[in-house]
Length: 193
Image (cartoon, rainbow, N blue to C red; front, side, top):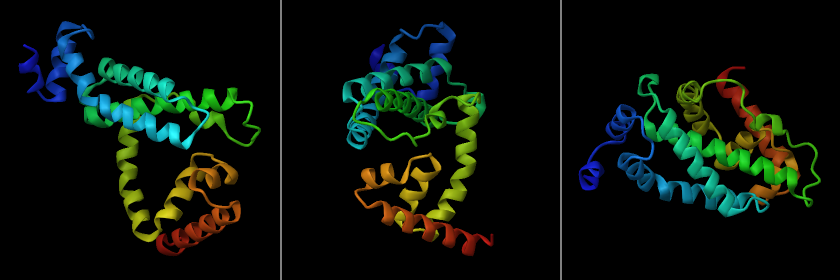
């Protein structure tokens, strides 16, 4: 039976889980096994960016996000399970990072906006659909901005301070400001605003 489950697509496995209403089924185990390495890589990457966040905590929270994705995935919302699962894992890890940054005595930076990491009341599926629509805009941006400018802009839009952006990217705050100003100028020039 387990071998047969491994041949099914994510969505087929999820339909089987919904029909039995048991997340502890073999289908769920197959999905967790499929996405385990993705959660591990995301946890490693996040732990490298935020030394105050513990890898084990990130990994555990990521797995909890994956289980939430399995439980709450709705095929009718239009997003693939892989996209939905990725967002759920990322959200769980962001919450873990926020808690670790708040608890870290080494972190004296008061201009980090933790409210940006909190739930805005939207359904996760709606957030995914919005992100997919925004994908075209980001694709257009990546065509006009350098990788450094894209990274700085992305972190700035997620309410990171110049100091935090500099630490993550390994550059000085002045370089952060310069990259952000160049990005804004290119956006205005190329998008006619």
